[in-house]
Image 1 (tube, rainbow, N blue to C red):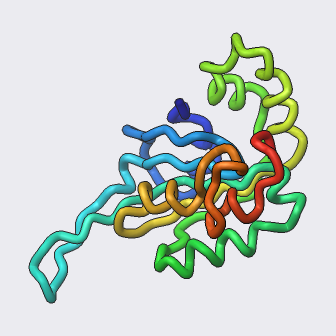
Image 2 (tube, rainbow, N blue to C red; image 1 turned 90 degrees about the vertical axis):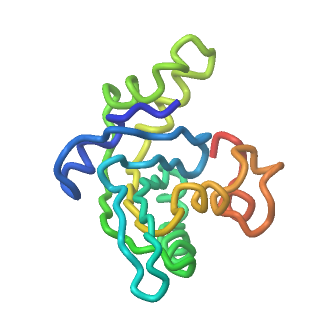
Length: 163
C-alpha cells in the first residue's frame, strides 16, 4: 500500500495542503495514487452535470528515466486528454522509501527494492482529469510485464517485474 507521504516533498511544490486520501496501485515502472485535495468539481454548462476531476501522481522509476521513456509516457497521458499540472525530477531518499515500502520491510527483496529506487532519479508527475486515477491504472497495466497487455506502459516498456 502506498504511503501518503512518499512524494509529499515533491508535491508540496505543486500544491498547498497535505494529502488526505490515496488509493494503492501495484508498483512497477509507474505508481499512481489519488491526491485528496486535488479532487474537485466543475459544473458542465452543456449538461448541467458535475464533472468530477481528479488528480493522480505518476512516478517514472529510475530505469524508465535511464531508458529515456519519460517523453513517451507523458505523450500517452496527454493523448488521453489529461492535463499535466506538476512535474519534478528528484532523487528519493532512503527515509522516504523506507516509509513508502514499510509493508515490504520483512520481505527478502526489500533491500534490493530500496537499492533500485535510490539508484537514479525519479520523475514524478501530477495529472488531472476526469477519472484519471482508474484510467491511469488501466494505462499503466499489470505489475508483471508478462501479464500486461500490449498497449499499456508496462506491456510495451517493462523488461522484468522489477524493471
